[in-house]
Length: 320
Image 1: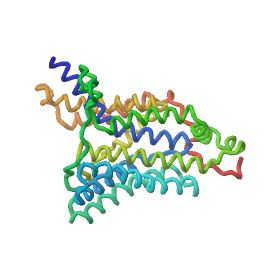
Image 2: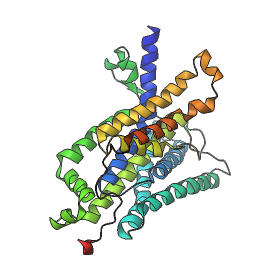
Image 3: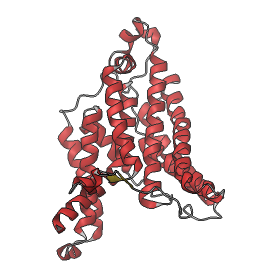
Image 4: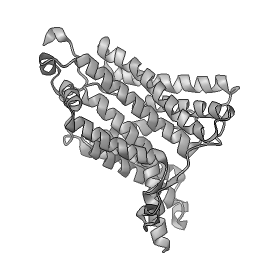
């Protein structure tokens, strides 16, 4: 029975680490399917993690108790929407280089959130530890099933929400007129404009959805695994989410599978440390594992993933 418990716990840990990546990858898909490159996923996740930590702390301080993590999630979504507007205005309205705009978002998030935390908490480099972080929900009956009960049905509410987001995103993109229009402006914006689709409006919506979901992914890290926000809370997970999106070929189900793979690489790094032989391996090498796998996956995906045809290209109605 020990190995059954171990596998169940490994699966559970995998999904915990995957959740933030799933949200962020789904966000990236909405932006890039509309034709707007979003390198700023890392920064949007950082903004979300910051907003969740600060809002939850002050909600706790105001006596809101168990509701405070959900207030933190809402705050993350709001700041994600606002921050994504910066990228949208720069890249869609002013036709700035989308990669540079995304990099600016990343630098802005790192610097501004650290400054705000120090300003708000008397020079501390992180928010105070949250007393009311999210707790795991055990689904009755299903949580008793061997392996998958412990692994899947005894998880954080954000994990269940992330799986729902994957299903909803897949349905919206491939089964609704909105999804068709969004994909059309990412593939051939001038043709979409010709038949009456508002290209800029659709791209704005795609980028803003991206911001909300990426920020929610950042909030997930703060509210489940760290219970605090600091400058290294996200530490590259936004870039791993972008890799998951590319490896998943800009498809929600494919990106979900890639995110779970990267989550597994982080989870297995934790389990390595349980074995005596792993003590001879420097911890830095174990922590490197997810990022090394990211590089390997991206190299493997070169030439096999087909990005939206108009990705990264500003749309000028006068040049149709």
